[in-house]
Image (cartoon, rainbow, N blue to C red; front, side, top):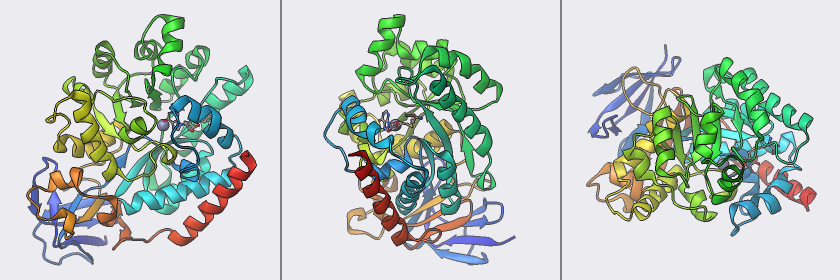
Length: 430
Ligand SMILES: N[C@@H](CCSC[C@H]1O[C@@H](n2cnc3c(=O)[nH]cnc32)[C@H](O)[C@@H]1O)C(=O)O
Ligand SMILES: [Zn+2]
């Protein structure tokens, strides 16, 4: 057994209190052995003085390789943005592009303290390779869209999602888990849900999809079935403890109730919702109803970064606006969303720094002008800290960022390759 000691820092405990403590990790098991006063007992030492050791952040909804389309099409609502810009560009995506874009996403997430993420995209073999190389943890899936496809192509897309989920679950020493990811209730035909969802359940695979992101998600389902999309999704077997949805912006009281009853988690993506003017999710109402709420960036083309510190601040701000109440979506609730909430939504065993827990951490440097004085660590994490304050990132007991530098991937090479792939992709699309 090789041990790693995170020494000299403060630690954010699961009850969100902060204490002066060291953390001892069994690197081979990727597990925390002890949190307390250790004084140099680790085989390897990582200096955390002046810093806070917190659970690694969990990005519970996104499309990693969309980093290639960052800044490609801005200032448009979701439907026009997808149909006029994003989908035509994605039609030209090749496997190598997805690998390059996901590596860039990995570097960006690691540098800003994210240790686990959820990815809904294409060419998932490439995504898995990038995750494996980066040392990250992820729940990945192939996104299914059947609108605009003939029956054969639609079925093939759903088959691919199932095959990918079965093929990759448990990869990278168990750091990679999978899900089947139909894009949304209105972009996948009813007959395909009916044919495939029972098979997904039989195989014991979780489900993840976009729900009620904009009013355009509601209209076609209300027109055809006379019910809200959440009810329609429940009829199709899409809700439950093993399901989590992204957005949940336009959900009425009965839908919130149904999400709570079925144990379906909601991943809030405030930056994407603001940028595309999709609306304000009723986050405080979801929390009050007992819905598990996580946090996600969505893709880098609708955010436009993958920094969960930004996302935490946005969640607090927009949550207050939505509730018209400054006490709504308070800092501790937001920190929980970005850690345990996201982890529970995505079914990953992370989100707490404790003995016996998984060794995934972000170490945040508090010796910064904008983090001075420190009346309250949790307040700073939400309202004042930035991803660039992350000093070290540790996943599964391995130090993936040390003093701001990624140890597993060559950052310059990753940036260069992503730029080349992005330029060639956009050339092909235009
Ligand atoms: N196999 C599918 C791929 C779906 S991947 C998931 C999709 O979600 C898209 N996407 C990204 N951000 C959002 C969002 O905010 N709402 C809805 N879709 C999004 C993304 O561009 C990608 O096309 C196909 O044949 O089209
Ligand atoms: Zn999305």
